[in-house]
Length: 383
Length: 213
Image (cartoon, rainbow over all chains, first blue to last red):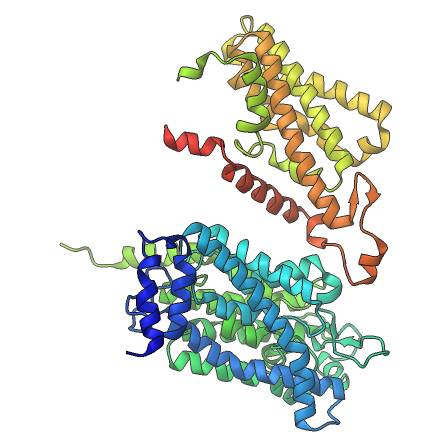
């Protein structure tokens, strides 16, 4: 027998319900699961009708997020050097800025997770692996680390643990954390401007994001183009923005991977894209202002801001999304609808993705309830 | 229930901690959100509500054998409304600035569930002295939560305690900034929720007794 395995076999009895250290069972199980695949199946939601368990489920999401994360690091460096450096230089500069944010997010997040697991006696779950990575991706690269720590604490405790832990949360914890930082420290997070990493001695560069443009009297598409945000630049992601949101391409690649492996519901993602396209087309036709995002059209709405990241990885969180198939279409569609609505007609929040996903999270139990009622009413009575 | 005959001391302290109107009965939340941005307003509001609850309990308890039960709510509201008008006038006369900040919320004490709740639940069935103590205890319990919430919100949201800055300039230079969420109403929701959680997990909390019964 492998020596590591025999260590676990020896220590195992201490952590069982009668053992001396049964209080720390959660930490013990998490350590053991880290090395060996556990044989028992999950006892907490999300339950998926498949043979994959929560660990595999979450590692697929991490896999899908890896390209986005790596490109995010690269892009931070790319913006810092203005593109005039070697690939290695740009990547290492970006990684030096982004890795501490991710480490703080994981470290503080796991502290709360382990604390609650120990006190409440539930297992340390893998959900935090995703939350702890998603949250940094929604932040600007210049965010102070203490705000990252406060944000992830709020997301894990108020967004998840007060409801009873993984599988019982009403809201997506990563977005709850972002919403907390967004409303608490608007100076570091404002949606109008974007904070780039800048050279020491120079004031932090802050430029307008594509989403805050408009209102100049010109046609909106021309305003966006003149500011340097061509469609392909927005699509590939070589523009300043939050760490993970810039590349719509890589977000959608991750989404396709998750849809093919059936980890994420394709109904939510396609519903969301349909929502954005339909709503922005309707707005284009309506007699609204031609110089704001009201009439920017579907492509700009799809590729700019955090929509690609949000619909691929946040809206598809299996816990906070509806469980019925027709409900998922409705849920996705309204996320797209509210995103375009907020961007177009609410000047206070130029980026509506976070708020529309959180808003629809609140409604997902109701959507489930109504769709189940309708399905039950349509069923032929069992006579 | 065996605790039908409470001692006067118990009657008074029950409202302050064990059956605290905000943290245990979850009453009076609306004004707890509105006036807790600063400690100054929270303290004044707590005192105002304590006076109103105590006096209305006393008066209603003295009148309780004369009030016809069919119109008791109207009579109770008349008593409470008169007291609130008196309080409002006193505040406007002596604490004009704070009265301006509290604006409509002093007048809204009339509709505060705690006042009418104590009148209905306690004063109508008990003697004047216990009723007075019960009203004062509940008012102080409300004030206690208000001040606790306002302390956290003012400290984190504006870096002040009762109007005095306590965050040293060196912190601000090092990158500290105030938590904007605490100035918004949702901040009060989170703080009240956390306080209820804290209170229920402390030993001697009433929830455990309730489940044990």
